[in-house]
Image (cartoon, rainbow, N blue to C red):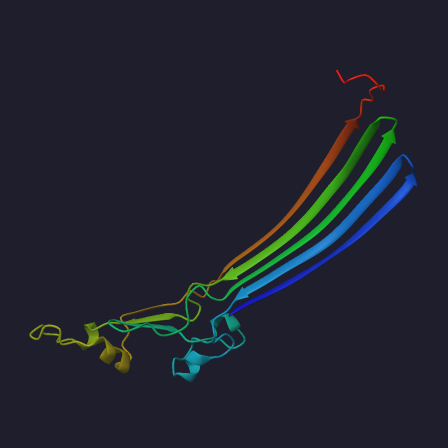
Length: 196
């Protein structure tokens, strides 16, 4: 399930001080929130299926069903690396002054941007349990291939388990400013003369 919310606002203000002096000012904000969630997001399915300690109360990132890999069978459970939650906020302000004198135009301005980005993701917040035939095979080794991975699952003997509770969380704030100046000089050619 994907959720995306977009918001944006902008305010413009122009002021003519005189025929030769004009100010332009703009300010804006934009927000992009995106989330990729699994179908069991917010539900404590692992707890309901009898797998204790996986779904942490109040932590929706650990909600859902743990991944169960049984050798020779299709994997069960919610996908890894989900949920993925991204928030991106941008604040921007731009202002410029334009001076006109005869055939010359000078435009100066400043641009300020503030950007906040937060990304949150976990590879195995609900844990992963792997089962193979090792625990149900013949310990003496007399009968080859006697074990059964599904029997290991039914007995509750996983070969390996892992869980990543430390979520990859990246937060970045950056501020950038820029100044600009542009000079335009228009050469006037008297009528009847071709340009040089």
